[in-house]
Length: 413
Image (cartoon, rainbow, N blue to C red; front, side, top):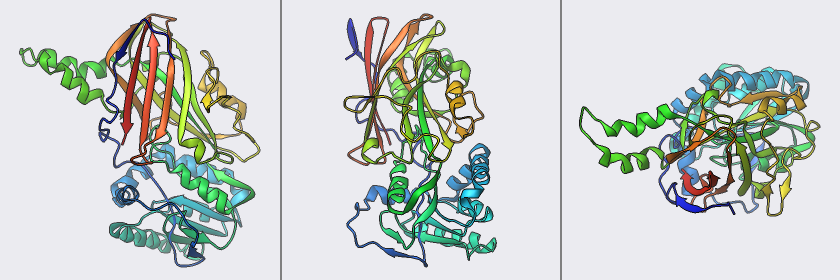
């Protein structure tokens, strides 16, 4: 537990709503089809009403437009396909997704023998979207290569092993929406030994941040509204502004320390059970004197072959699946970490890199903590799949600094 001289509850109610900017913006993909698949007779996880609502959200073309227009995202995937063309040309590819099929088309243009684009849409509106994806394939004269399948990875069967799995599965805070589980299922069911997974590795980071402008805009505004004292609104304003995780863009200037690695994921070896609950203990030393407003989370993914990281060696584990606090010690930067795999192509959502539609996810405190240079900030973060809906994330944050300790809880819905 955290050291403390006094304890405060300065966080989210455990079951607070979190729909602010999170509900309709991300991706899931799976494949439907007409050729080369059949419905599995094996018992699979039930498709819940939450799954249906999730798939439904991807039936809106605006979400796909947002993702495709994210040039950092789309061009990095295309560059990765070109870089690994020797592993794709003449091979069988599965694109685990629920989109327009752009990654499947990229793979087909790179010479793939056959691409099975698993679209994870299971509602009436999404059937129409499925037909549109088929029309896109036809319009590009790729119907002989790209087979659009309709259903969940758990429900669809492919009658051959595949050489490559590609998917844009990342959610806010990396694991929101739990789509990585579908990639794992596809890997375990269909990928040949030595096959390629793109992206191959992912890393989730966190760091304490200062953001006075955001706090002033949302909170201090109420202290003087056209000359009227509305300070009575402050408690409600703090709850409305900071109860939920917030997806927004910050810069490197907002970050108080080097980032800490919460979780490193090797897509060749990770298990679904490993993702159900993740706990990491952290320790930061502030690089400046500033108000400490909360924590930011971001991620990067790498596009490497399985030999680059044969094991999940970026995170040392303690008993109970808790990540070691020295995974990412102060003074070791994200840039230095990447140098260990200088052959890898990286898609980053870090504050200092070009912005993406993922932005960063911030957990704000109701009240900032003043920290001095070199002051220690320590605690733990637990991310677990919600029992209500596994696509949601339960967040339990413990943090201590300056002799005080705090707890913050939230659900990312």
